Image (cartoon, rainbow, N blue to C red; front, side, top):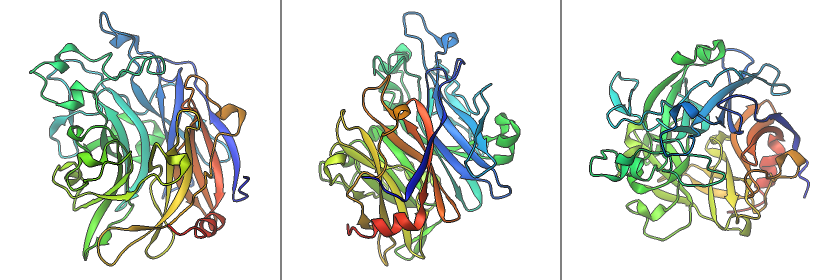
Length: 393
């Protein structure tokens, strides 16, 4: 079906010659600068990193974030193709996997090997980015998807102090502060400050972490509210039902509290329609559309043949407890339908939005196509919301 409120799809970046973005570019986050007309973009990229190859191991492919920008509301884009904006350190020594956080403390560096799938957002006037990180880089994972194939041998010994973050190279979601002025000027070393890990590897794979851009009243208290997509939701205390990967919600007083194993988590939404049978997860940070209503872009995966596609739901804040889903579109609103969006290295089709911002009456979305390229599209905000509100959850 052709949805007339979705328009202006276009390719804006494909892999380019380099040692950090020659294989793929994808999953871009975007944010509007509050002090100028610039839209900033951080995108995921990878290429062969021969200088960190260990004897007997495949060539590692660390995941980097590159920088791009638009000064005309997303009509045209420019990119810094000379260097990444932020790079993993790729340390292999057990005692060097550390990083200085925003308090000046040396903490475990969960972003040592991969910094993936950025989501940019403002919270209390500060710009942040959430990233899905791994302690070690993979090899050519589109050929062999083995997360530990480039990891050091000590990960499987009793000397490993990092648990599953090392032994299984499990994804840990990390929050960074972002200085947009430094980013725009190319002063990348000062653009990112490590804040904390938002998830704990002991619960297994967990991705698609999103934070509401303001505190919500939860049982009468102002809280930071986070969405996440654990591969196994029942690994968390309090979620007793065996579920496929689903959207989970939780609240805390400060960012550091989200990785607390004792934090109470609730299931917000589970796979419901055929096209999301395998999993669902949040895609882009929630957009406020009313005094107590939020638009949430989310993705579903049916199987390896249908792949990842995008839709939307509406959440409403409650007088007690967490926000609840009030409306949910049963249809796939964004699918791969352009030649440049079709699978290549990866055989599973994939349209994966990681950025969504308001531009007047329009929404600008940024997305990864086929896990190899970057596109943008526009959505008429009122048209989309009116359509979603046709479908009660």
